[in-house]
Length: 317
Image: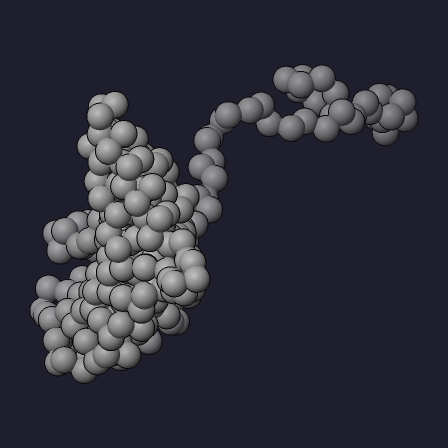
């Protein structure tokens, strides 16, 4: 290990020497300096000194940029992303990916720029989904500028799924519509049908039944028979406030086998509450004693006939 570090330090000294100027050397030798820094980075990586490896890659990238070798400058940043992943230093990855993509675009290689954004987003997707979301958005913009519609639809799909995962349903609905538009350009009706189901689920998650029904009417003609039947049952269940019918529709096989984010959304979707009917009270006969007025005497007493007048005791005589 120590020999590799000593070798790396020697390459750094050579790189610094290449960058020095003098009366007879007016311009730094960026080309050789970049090469020496790159060799030093390799030595540091073999010695498991990843911090110094990353720093040398950054310096190599800067030298290539000064020398207008933009592709090589971007490539060094691309390698630095992998070093950050190995170090578990994920906080710098988004910035490095954006800088690398920008250099690739300046060189005229936007596909390579989109690829580095995609690679960095995959690294960040689990632990930093917000950063991954921004990188995928940039990837969509990069490839759509170059008319790479299919690739753009793939990145747009990742954007929508992360938004659903984060509960950003308003933005997810817009992202799905954009994805549908990209698939329309290439005539992929099957993909549009699946996205129509996803859009209906997202609109129901937003609590907007009218928007869900509108999405089905707009894109339902691209769905297959099973999808149409399930969506009709689902929308009918929410219209009738029938939770059992809604549960059966959401448990259909093709919904359970959708992308993980949409399958989980369907599983956690609030069901309609249903119409509650107040049951009638049951009357139980002889459940309590009959009410007796206190003026009628004690309960159970037989009322006595009225007493005869004294004049009537003796009769007429």
